[in-house]
Amino acid sequence: MASEPLRGQIESAWNSVAGGESPLIGYTILNENVDDSGFLMAILDFPENHFNIDTDSVFFIGFSMGGFMSHKMAIEHGDIITAIASVSGTIGTAIIGQTPQFKVNVLHFQGTDDSRVRYEDTFFNNGIGYYSVGTGAEQTVEAWRN
Image (cartoon, rainbow, N blue to C red; front, side):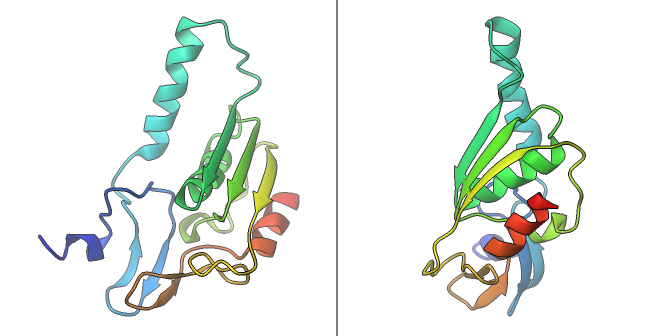
């Protein structure tokens, strides 16, 4: 079981479809068998069903892997999500090229000196080597602009 984290199961990572070709283990998506999207939608159901909330104003914000997850949620659930803000998290490799079906407002922050999720190409250093996990910052903004 010690090798399990290298096979894509990392307990503290969202299944944000961030993943890619790792030099030693091949193509992998982190926690791809975990339904985090369904989990977050279930969390939204509770206040909607028990409180008087404005369901036309649903926002997601995340940092790093949470930023990746915010982008995934906007692409998959744009009919419910009004806007997202992502800090150092881009569009994961498994959903690059998917066209959002609904307009979602996006605020994206990305540092040019981020050593984990890089600005230009979102290569991630997993301690073994660098591999692409998603779009670059400008590619992310352009994807949403289009």
